[in-house]
Length: 322
Figure 1 (cartoon, rainbow, N blue to C red):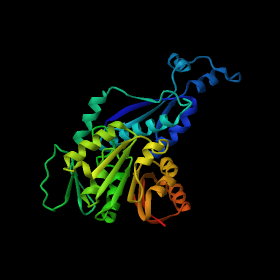
Figure 2: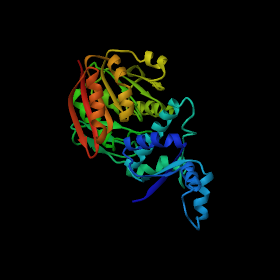
Figure 3: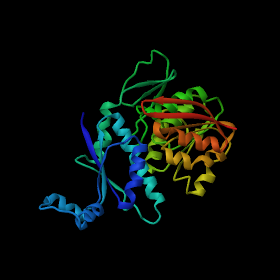
Figure 4: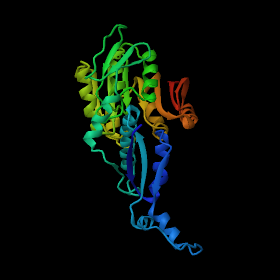
């Protein structure tokens, strides 16, 4: 298995915040290089040493960063796309620039190369009882009469390979009804948005913080023959951008949000205000260790838990608004 080295540049203050978010994305191993920690070590009057390696001394003036290693496969491609979106979300909330420049570097791999490398791992995939997800360059003989969802995710999260996406799709094929108004928050490649229409929803509103995700979503709508009157797209952070939030509409029959635990918790009241009475909310992107936090926070504001689904360490849950 090959690995790609990804470094995130931040500050001492930002390390804990980023590490928490990385763990929410399922990344549990990382290397932290923090110059302030090393400078404290040098200034420790009680320390005794005869020699410090020259490379180690160089840390005293280096920029604080967190390095992670991501597998070069379909899961890794999804993880990197999700990581980029999460870093952008943190940067937008960092009004006082406490967390530094929050830029990502990928060692020895150009951005355009990464966007193509994952294609070798992306093959047709059956999900649930109804859907078949495939990239445009793969042929598929549809002998089992599945709904074909064609997706080219580029650098956006959402090939269907990740457990969190599959869990959402499995819930959706049970939940979507004809004439449903559907809201997809954190749409990524548009995979859930498109699935909603294919499963019978009347219309979908797709929202993402990344402009690239919105562009990719629109392209994927076109690939699947979905006409513009069926969808609307918005780029921005609906937690902080009231204008976009007010543009979305209300009384949705179904909302999906495949993000991370902290953001799902922060969006609780938004879900409640956007959903109709007895409407369904499907949340995913939850690492198992934080499942109870998310579920409890939504129950506390008036949602009823209907069902949980789990794959490996990932959890999705369906709620009804009381």
